[in-house]
Length: 144
Image (tube, rainbow, N blue to C red; front, side, top):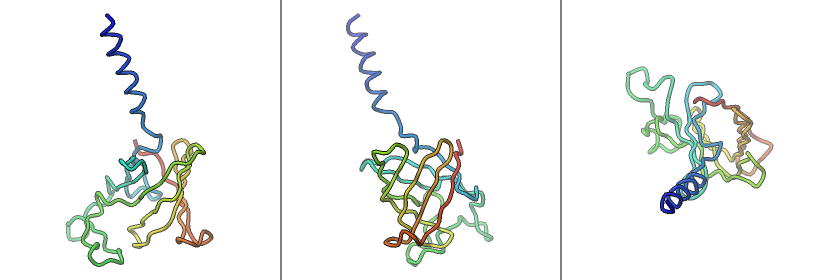
């Protein structure tokens, strides 16, 4: 009997450690043209990758690639699976994530950013790194 209690205790203890952060879900971008899965990596920071595209192929029927990237070597990289959110850190303030970068494959630009989780929506604010007043905001919605 005490072994059963020990095993159950271990199970409940481990399940509490395995709780996901509320940010770790799948989100529609503002235009609902893609879904982004946000996950916590082994470095403890949050990343987001494209896991679905409304239009996965180009006009030639080939998988869409990162054609707007300023680095020509990256332009052949598929959009599906592309990591567009990098290294966001959760703050002491609940549901607020900072110091990450947001990559926009529509224009090939990278922005410094912050994310605010508000229930089933994410408020993203990206700015030109070093110029907080130059940027734009976007709202993503829960896709799952």
